[in-house]
Length: 138
Image 1 (cartoon, rainbow, N blue to C red):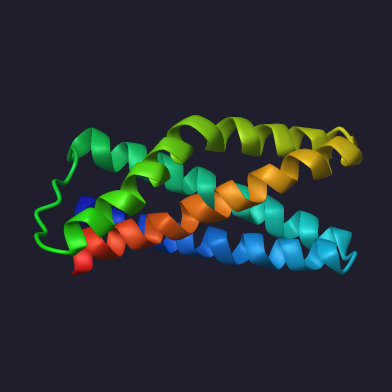
Image 2 (spheres, helix red, strand yellow):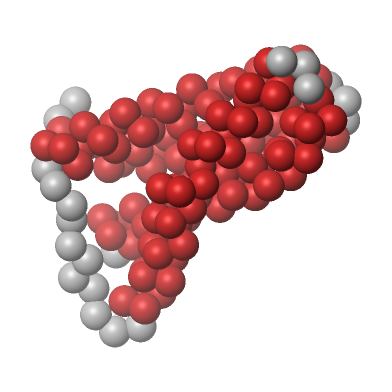
């Protein structure tokens, strides 16, 4: 695998994380706690792999400038800006808090925090894929 393959890998990891999050949510809604735990653990591992690959790529390559023009430019930045802010500021503390509460068996608090964590995590995962498609494929 080449260093320049990492953006595609990162988009795949984000998409996988999003699917696992939706599955995990569906499982917990149906009281399938073991399946929920497995999906959320897998989503955490996949997101951690994403973070490692993302840091490695940007450490070695730097950042890719968006050169698109016309209507796609404001659309791209409208997606990128909240994606970046939430990814940089909210993701790690929310995910770690939610996971830690679950591990400690503090499920009432886990549920309260997860109500914030899930939509933020899902938004960051899905918009990560959109950013990739706009930046590298359009």
